[in-house]
Image 1: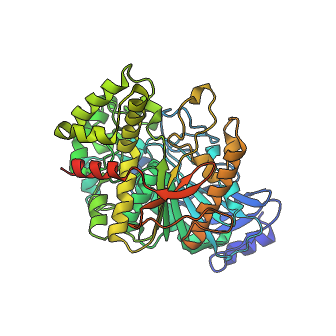
Image 2: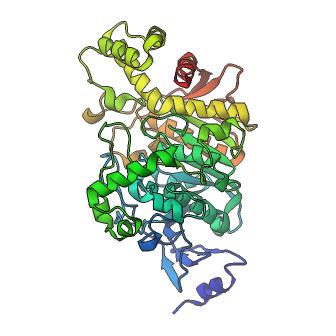
Image 3: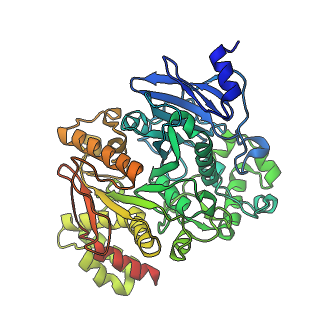
Length: 519
């Protein structure tokens, strides 16, 4: 039997969303009543369905509405992560996945918040190359960030073959003649859920910030470009990545993808028609190779489908058609450190070969910007160039495009603090994804010998990020001044043990890459 208070909530929840604060907090959302858990000064609601399970005939279709339930649904455990193979060793999960039935989200809200308190909302989009990841990772738990007076939301979205498969029959059955990008459509559905339900947790649907890292940051830039996401968010934070240039995640056209996707899947599972493919068990589809044989990139990632993305992301920004919102973005100093270390005995020779293969007649100009007078200097330049290819240049181009065609302010950062280095992380510095624990205040989710400067920077970054979500400006009392990114010096914030703003010392590199790659 449902208690009297919960029964009353079911009757009036649509008109007046409410939270019952207590040992087990409850909230009324559009599909029913959920019961979360109290975690000190924060209430956590985990594993809330925001769309129907994309299984059977719903596989490779836009997300459908979640079913309603009777009674009180427990929301104390993370939903299963979406289907994926074991790809990244640094990912640690606290769920029972993977599963196709994975379209759930989580909400962390200050325990003293009242319904309709209008707190800023921060919606996190996890990374993982669009082929891996999930919201249950301890390093991206929203508890500590919510203590700064914001409501934090994170969602699972379909990945790899399940989230980004293209096929001629899929386009034919679509009213929009589109295929792929189901994972991005999931993100839109989660943002729509936030608009309809976040007031029940004290959040302000009129003040939503999306933020993400790596593929999550690519997603943020794509959501800024997509007409489907218009009005669903008001600020954006991108950590290491954008859909402007990346050889591993190129955002190809639907026409480029259809035949390749179909052939790869057919060669592995022996099914080619859409009806056959929808009948293949999910575990068997996981046998389809994720990484390309060339070692560069993944088979299944977002495409320019003509629906979610009417045009390539750079073209949408160039035309000024993007969702013009405040933007804070940047990357880590050592984005290229993971693969490059120890790649070649003679780094100077490797750098010279790279310059000739990549830039031909422009090789000499490249070597002026990526110097290699000694092996250590050449190794550093190779790391920088790899990081620029994968992350930095595309993120820089995103900010430049927004500055050119948008009217809202842009703030830029570089995360510069080398992490404490046990043997397995020796020499990696401020590597790709290293900032996540700092942003979420979750340093203790990783067993490293953290130093006072790590704790201090984490506290600082949490304030910058939540200030931006609250006011559209990262600055606040007790923080080093962070100027807006502009032609007046192109200043950015260098985040380290002594964070301070300074000019972009590498701008000539990105301008060179822009000019040569454009040709």
